[in-house]
Image (cartoon, rainbow, N blue to C red; front, side, top):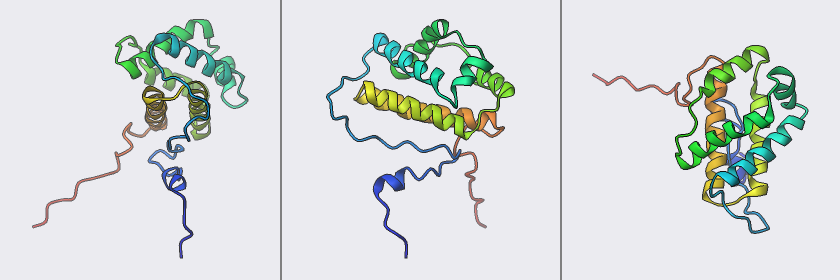
Length: 170
C-alpha cells in the first residue's frame, strides 16, 4: 500500500522532464510584502540575488573564477532580462543560450548547479516580494533553467520532447 503524500510532496516530487526540482508555490510570507512593480524592484532583486550567488560555495566560483563576471556591468543586463520576462519590456536582446553554452564548455553546468541557482533565486524572491509578478519570476526561472539545462546537456529545450503522437489505427 502506498504511503500517503502531502500535496506539496506530490507537486514537488523532483521528477520533472529535466530532473530539476519542480516549482511549488511557497507558503504566503508572514510579513506583508509588495509585488515586483518595475525596474527598481527588479534591480533590488537581481542585486540581492547575485550578491548571494557570488558568495555561494557551489555556484559562486562559476561567476567569480570561471567567467570572471563584472557584477556592476552585469546588473543592468539582468534587469533588462527580468524586466522583459515579467513586463514584456523588450529590453533584453542577448543570446542567453549561447552564453550558457560557453560557460558549460568551461565548467559543466549540472543539475546541482541549476538547482542551487533556482533555490537561491526562489528564496530571494520570497524574501523580498509577494504577488503575481513575484510568483511569475519564480515560475519563469524554473522554466528557463529547465530549458537551459536540457539544451546544455544536448537535449531539446522542451520538457515534452519525449512525448510522441500515436499512429492512427487502421
